[in-house]
Length: 248
Image 1 (cartoon, one colour):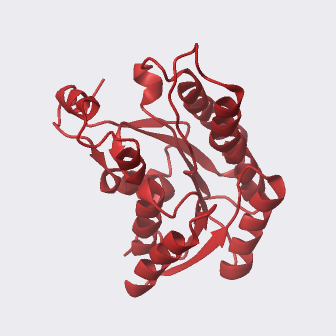
Image 2 (cartoon, helix red, strand yellow; image 1 turned 180 degrees about the horizontal axis):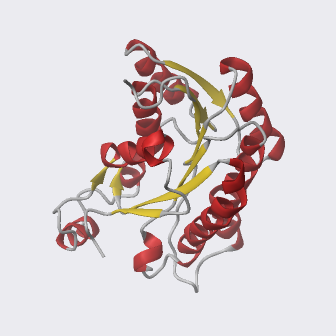
């Protein structure tokens, strides 16, 4: 029996990368999935097409999660289309790196708006639609464990994600809603390709520090999200699960 049969999930930022992999994995386990995107309609539609080709249910829904009205509309669309909401994966995020002497206010605002404000707004809307048994999975980052140079703003946003998860696990626990965080290390995506990380000296260094001897793949992260969304993790809340191949 599939782990998520009868459940409905929203995955933000699901047109590519980790979000797309999570959306596909949840659909494969029986969930109806709302594939959220901000601008990449064609990419989101492609994710939906793959899910439907495999016999799953999914729709692509545009929403800028940093805007309260759009976050609420995203949740309302999920409920209108599929009748309920059981799972929220807060995956939308951005990263930029700069030394403290060079970062600017625009960089700060962009990352905090998307990584923190957006997460809070979608969660606020989602919990009004969820009932007991609901699960919220926040995508944090292993960066908070290693605090590399030039990452002060990005690391701060992901530290906020972990802190929010801890607070909400206590706040929403009495409602029967669980909240957990996944903290991936460097994971190969379109973003790492665009940033020049793939095949770089930085990637080689990361691999040298990782006991399992490689960088992460999106397929390494998606099953963890499925676990946290499923009843298999019914006694797990307020946890930060490190997915780093053993890197510390």
